[in-house]
Image (tube, rainbow, N blue to C red; front, side):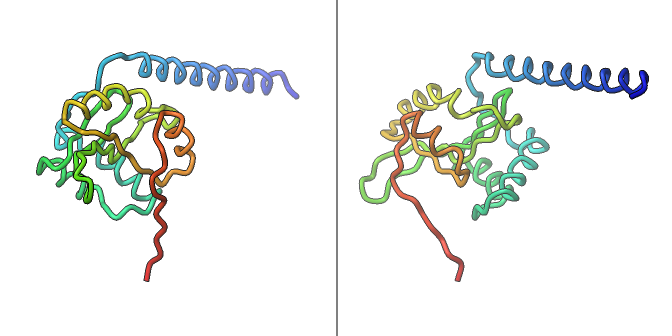
Length: 166
């Protein structure tokens, strides 16, 4: 191997390591940010939120489209919370038979995929749910890898839905 090739590879490796270190530092800064999520304006943030919701739709087969979420938040049926790390769409509903008020974390999106956005802010959402008179904090996911993390955070599996198109 020529000396110039060694130098080129070394520079490329240093650049990659520098970028990785920068990303680690950025993730740490985001996760160390102690500020609570804020209620955001989905219209103002749509250039960020819309593509993120589309990404979720492209990856999973939910029955909503990004515009449904926008309409739900705009109509006051759901709330858009934003953080430096991502966003959460939540809503309150009543269970059909028990009439219990439930706080649903409907959608959670982290800008960097290895961040555990919901888990970082669970204490905030627990407190908010109690303030809203809710007796349960609920979430659902099609992401197989989140089940164990949810159970470790105190969530229990209530029902597993299976669906077949006709």
